[in-house]
Amino acid sequence: MGYTGGPMTEAMYYVLLALLEPSHGYRLMQAVGEVSGGRVKMGPGTLYGVLSRLEEDGLIRRLPDRVTRRKTYELTPDGREALFTEYHRLEEMIRDMKRMKEAIRHDGENS
Image (tube, rainbow, N blue to C red; front, top):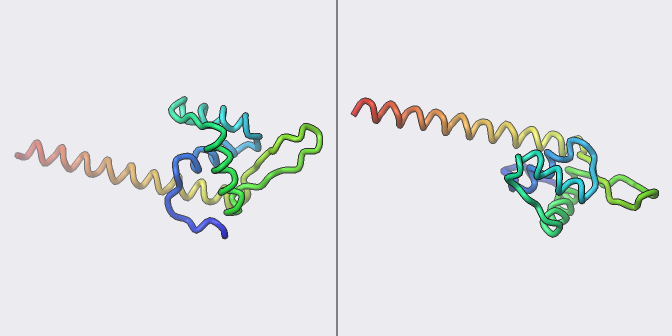
């Protein structure tokens, strides 16, 4: 299938962000909480659903681990590109909001 671009869900974004370093499921749940400043808490059901979708879309891959048998994941080059594309999209949205907020403030002062 493959990732078609466009806005990501919050869960997808934070999992990709947490996967800037390869990690396994339990550690990923912790890392999502850390990178979001504790704002996002992800349970196993949500996490493994997101991991499955990201893997299908070619944004992450599972690394072989015969020693611990943990499923460790890492970003693919496409996953890294998608993460930074989404980051820039979010930055643009914030800039737009700041411009609108400034325009509204100036309109209020001129009334």
